[in-house]
Image (cartoon, rainbow, N blue to C red):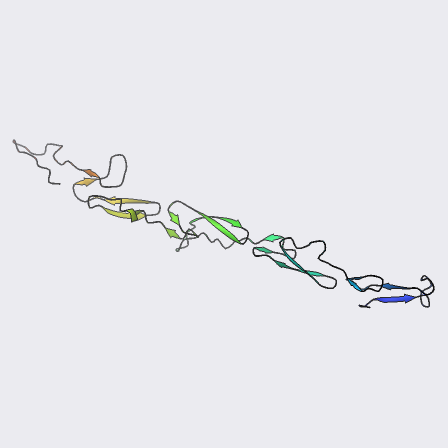
Length: 178
């Protein structure tokens, strides 16, 4: 049965009279080779389901896993997914099972760190200043009569006192027009 080779006492002196012996084909067991050996019984598929065939098995891997026994986590960071629209590395990639997470560098946002965050979106420049956006910083071009804070803030919040240096001579009175 099932490709077995059976012998009895008439052609094999090692077999007792009125008895027989079957040498089973690979994948079969039992006195008459009637039982398919369950190749999945040992649980060979680490992260997947096992399908038993005659003499071998196959694994159907869960998402994120690969290999003959579903033993290898697929490296979802291999394609370098944490990249901006212009190809700049915007963050570091952490591989997960069936996915990844990008930890964005300062100035970048988005699932893949693909967006250069607009630091000018909050309108940080006051008093008519113009905001110029860069990666992770901005600068303000101030309107005449205003300057950035001496503490380093780029905001055009300081009113320049043009009269502080007493520019008017011969008894003139200085009037700061801004």
